[in-house]
Image 1: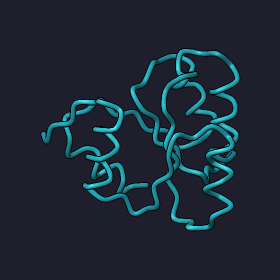
Image 2: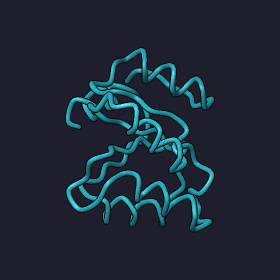
Image 3: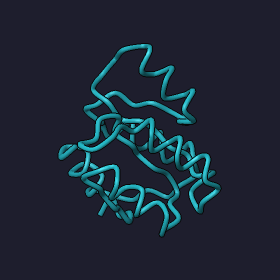
Image 4: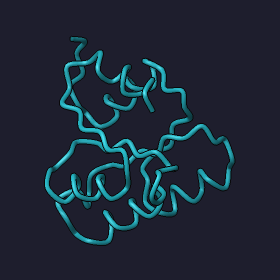
Length: 113
C-alpha cells in the first residue's frame, strides 16, 4: 500500500488512508468521498466486508464508487468484489495510467502537485 500512497500523493488531491478496517469504517461514516480505493486484505477484516457494510447502511458513502486494490489476480476475487458492490478492480502495483483512467471515469479533477 505504501507505493499506492506515494503515487497518489503526487497528485493535488485530498487523501485519507486507513491502516485497518475499523479505522476505514470510522472515516467512511464521517466524511463523503469521491471515490474509495479499498485493499482486499486488511489486518482486522477484508475489503469485501467493508464494501458490504458501506453499501447496506445507506450512509454518506453508500453510492460512492468503491474500487478494489489487490495483488491477487484470482478471478474469483474479482467476482467476489463485484458481487459485494465494487465498481472496479485494480491489480497492484498501481500505475499512473490506472489512476488517470480511474479519476476520468468518475469525472474527478486530477492535477499533479
